[in-house]
Length: 477
Image (cartoon, rainbow, N blue to C red; front, side):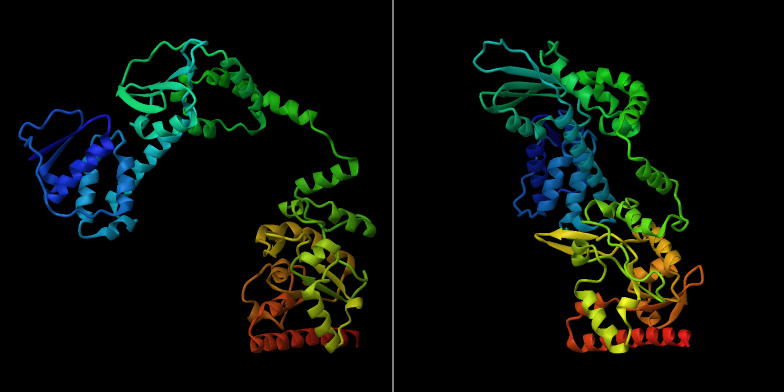
């Protein structure tokens, strides 16, 4: 039986060297007693470490993980690391095996150490201990980490506070930064640190950025556990701020600016989940669409794009959403897709000026890419929110036939999105019985790069628009 005792300072390098020697000598995990930091040797352990001569090759991903896990507080961490390393000798692919229980355990320990390091960076509070007239200011802090994270995290503080001398005292290790260099000493008891003159300023700042309207106590305590509060000067204000939060939130709401009465009535109707069709004056619908904030798309779009055409039109043409050109001009189907539609409609005798043209979604959804705005398909929630306006347009126009171009229009009108190619050219019915002819969106034709595919798709689109013209003519006769 071999014994390996890892020192408290320099544990990562010590474990790495011990593991390398054991692995090179071919010592299996069950023949090693990892006594932990500073522990006494096992009663029957060999004090002399074996000397291996074989080459040792270890995946870099394991080394990175091991140099974090060694700082975990689990007394079995060294044995767990070596046991997994032993298995890696002939199976390096284990580092990517998400189903391996040993790896999952080590990854969990690695995550815990990283979290502890994050808390240390966030919750260490320095207080000045040196003389005010000293050539270099000196500070100290007391911290109680969950794991042994002082040594691996000291470099962060050295980089951030390199213009002063400091020490971070913990029960296990003390990190000291003096004259530009970091050193480590044994842990100490909590020192008596004087109150810093700037703490009151920091507490005032903390109280002023505390937002009572967004308070979630459980989430706050998850990110700022109570175990750290005793060392945070601002934590003394937290119970009072929590207790006052409801009253402060109500006061903020009462002090908020109000909307004009007409706009307020519209907002209240939207917040109430109003789903009935527009019951205001006909000339008021465009203004109401302009003011729409039912979904987040209004925030980035230039403007809402309303429908246009005769209010007694027999045909309503419904597209997906405005494109870049439509968003800038405020009119539907004036971009490349609209030009394709006009060309095909002209061939089959379908006059656009006699139809009411609109979109299922009234605001342009896009992703910025440099100076370009790349079209994105609306999701079901956005389609559902905008369906209120499409219902209002349908109620005003009362068309005999609706031409739904594309999957978004089909979903908005019929409640079904999929299988567009098998549905195109057929008349379906909306939940209220409205006839809906399904077809392709002209932008689909523009996206086809293969000339033969584009010709075939254009022929299908041509047939569907001719079907619409025939249906309208039959109804008139």
